[in-house]
Amino acid sequence: MIFIAVRFTVRPNRADDWLDVVADFTRATRAEPGNLFYDWSRSVDDPCVYTLLEGFADAEAGAAHVAAPHFAAGLAAMAPAIATTPEIIHVDTPQQGWAAMAELTPVDAP
View 1 (cartoon, rainbow, N blue to C red):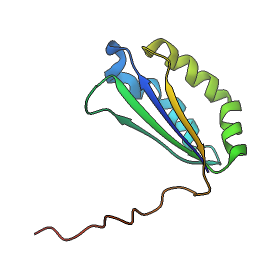
View 2 (view 1 turned 180 degrees about the vertical axis):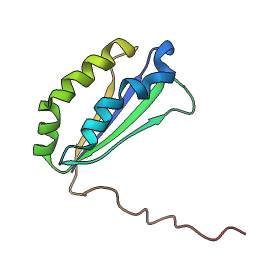
View 3 (view 1 turned 90 degrees about the horizontal axis):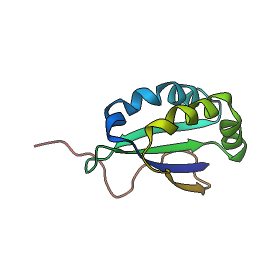
View 4 (view 1 turned 135 degrees about the vertical axis):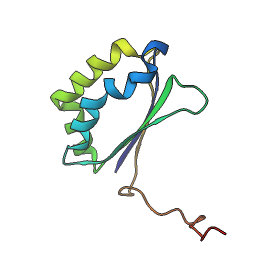
């Protein structure tokens, strides 16, 4: 699996509508055959910071994502809304998707 984490710092005037800015790109990416997950989170410390977690089945799926027309359209939509160049972590891992966390399981609430 290709695992990618990208941190975006968004312009303050675009922070509240960021998910609208990336909605078409998110929807199209989630529909790609090799996409395992594509999830956005907003920082609890800075409302202008969003983190994207992406998983693709393999390098070919990742390459297809970057070559897709919606990739270029998504970058074009994001560029005017970001305040800084995004930061990225890109890892090729043998794991496929999310695994259960061994250290924590639910218990019944009192």
